[in-house]
Image (tube, rainbow, N blue to C red):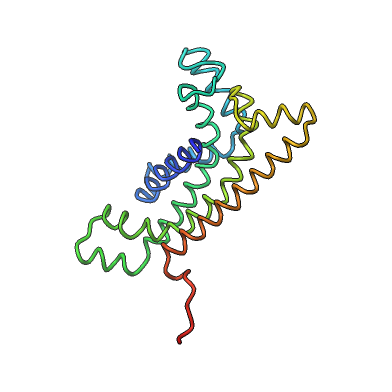
Amino acid sequence: MYSFALSAGIALLIGTTAAVAAGRWPDIVARGVTLAMLAVPSFVLGVVPLDMLVVRAGLGRVIADGTWATVFLPALTLALATAATWSRVLRTALLEAQSAPYLRVSAARGAGRWHRLWVHQLPGAAAPFLTVVGLGTAALIGGAPIVESVFTWPGIGRYTVEAINARDMPVVVGFTLVAVVTYVVTSLVVDLLCTVIDPQLRAVRPPG
């Protein structure tokens, strides 16, 4: 859940910044950062901060104990690649919404850039963004075993890795079922939210 919140927050920050400053240096920097986040494997993203920040700088603990004091680095490592994908989709959706006719009407009425962004563009871009967020939950769940093993985080992912090494099949099957159920429920919630946000997706009832 913490990784999910970090992914959404980072994606909103980078995607919105890139869309508002499209073609300028913040957009170029944002796209370069997201490309690096996508290109570097998650275990490298985990080992480098662990070595630089924890071992060398002494910030945090080498062995995570499952408390909030040690959750940030593993959650951030798990969230970066997913946030990069979500931010790129959000940037594209915001730029597509920017060309909508109602935005020109809103600008003609004197609405500022930020007002148009929060009132019109973000709701217009919410459907594709929420869709990719729903699909991205699978990546978060799938990456948990690697990241939790790197940071020795006592979570379900590390427990599953230990179960695989011990050939404990009921635990492996249970983790798979939890991942599938989480993915299905998240996709259902996202579809319902998209239907509420976008009136074009609502079913049209026949008259009478």
